[in-house]
Length: 327
Image: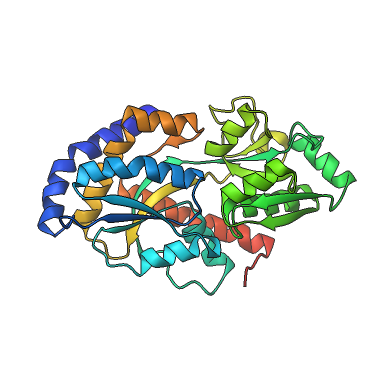
C-alpha cells in the first residue's frame, strides 16, 4: 500500500513544475504575501504538529512565508468557518481532521458553512486512526475487560473527547451503544487539554490520535485497549481492532488533510497538491508521520474529495443511529 502511495506521490511531484507555472499565471502565490494554515485545535496536538512541520517546507516551495494559526472552538467549526469565508486565492488553508466536514454537518443545523460548497479539498496528508487509551488505574488490558468492568460499575468511568462531535466523541458513543455500557462524556477544546487531565486522572478513557497515543503508551502513561480502524496499526501491532475484540462498527479510519476555500482555482489546487505531495515524500516528514503511528497518505485532490463525501455519508448513518445532536 505504501509503495502505491509513493508512486502516486511521485506522479504528483512530476506535475509540480507545470502546476507551479499555471498557478503563478493566476496570481498564486502573491509575492510577499503569507499563506496561512488554519489549525482548528489548540497547539500541541497531532494536527498542529504536522502543520508546523509542513509550514517551513511549503514556504520554501512557494517562495512566500507560511504561518500556522491555531483557531480552536466550536468543535473545529470556528477555524473551518474562517477558511470558508476567506478569499479563494490559495493564501488561506485549513488543515483538519474529519470533524468539520463529515461529522458536524449531521450533528448541528447551525454551521455557518456548507462542507462541500464552501471548501476545496486539496490533499489527504495522513491516514490517522484513533486508539482507545486508558489510565493505568483502569483495571482492563483490552476492550473485553473494559466492557466487563464498565458493566459492573455503571457510570463510574468517564472519557475525554477533543471536542463534541469529534471522532473521539463519536467512537466512544458507538462503544457505549454497541457494548451496552454507561460511561460519562467530558468534552475538551483540543487533545492537549484532554491528555493533561487524562494524565491527572480526572478522566480515565480517551479515543486519542495515534501520533500522541503511541508516545504516551510507550512512556507507560496510558495503555492502549483497541484500535478504531479496519486493520491493526504498525506502531501498535499487538493492539487488536475493536472488531477483533467483538465490538463492531468502530472502524471508520481517520485522516488529516488540507482544504482551501470553495472555488479555489484548479491551477492553484494543483500547485498546492503537487507541493504538499512532494513535501510528504521527504524522508524526514515520512519518518515523523510514521513515528507518530500514522500512515503518510497523499494522492490527488479528486481522491480526497471522494473520501470526504464517502465518510460524510457513513458518519451520517452512524450519527442518526445514535440519535446525537449538539444543538
